[in-house]
Image (cartoon, rainbow, N blue to C red; front, side, top):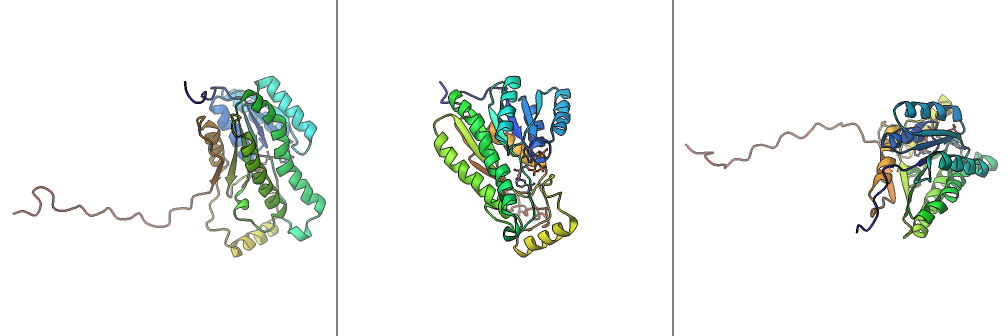
Length: 276
Ligand SMILES: NC(=O)c1ccc[n+]([C@@H]2O[C@H](COP(=O)([O-])OP(=O)(O)OC[C@H]3O[C@@H](n4cnc5c(N)ncnc54)[C@H](OP(=O)(O)O)[C@@H]3O)[C@@H](O)[C@H]2O)c1
């Protein structure tokens, strides 16, 4: 008798923030792996377009409006997903946006609004989905954090606070879920080319980038693609039972700038060498 039942082949997955970027790429990848996916975001039309594409490609997908800053909206999303696709096996918390204000210049209501989406929004998903997972003794929760927890950036104070909150909550959750069969994992991406920050005007973007260079935060100009992060999320949930990837940080690899080392010289002294 194995220590753990293997994952079922079909694992209904709820994805918050599925209208673009990492969430959209995760929906496509999980659907391609045979899992039914529920795509949630405020732009439900964009979720529906992607769901349609997934269905055309043979996958199972439902699009439903979702605002993670509203508990009623989260409850409706979770209930619609469960009715259409079955009990959730996977939930991915990937909704979010960010401003570019300095902490002392940021209105406290705007600060609280960012926490509402990134931190309380993640908690709303957990509180609506995890009790059922615990009752079924199985499930994967993926909380998308950010490398700003390890290396904070200027002009992102509310975001840095929220993501630190997400990881703190995740650590407590992991302890509380130990032995329940439910795995909570943090995926911590570095810079990723998505819709995030694309609302900043060119002047703000230039200023912010210069600040980050001054703080040593821009080592090379490469970004992850949403697919790269989605592949990590898919790997975290596909990890066989008995193993738990608790925290995975993913960074863009730098371009190769050093020439490959020359082939090592052939070792002399073999049979017949040096004779005659
Ligand atoms: N891009 C990066 O460099 C980076 C790095 C580290 C971590 N992350 C994290 O990765 C996650 C995904 O972001 P992304 O980079 O893929 O950005 P993105 O392309 O802008 O996607 C963000 C998603 O969140 C949704 N969203 C925003 N507010 C929402 C709300 N109140 N309720 C429901 N959905 C909401 C957006 O859809 P609607 O606008 O349609 O609601 C969108 O689908 C975020 O948690 C972000 O913090 C990103």
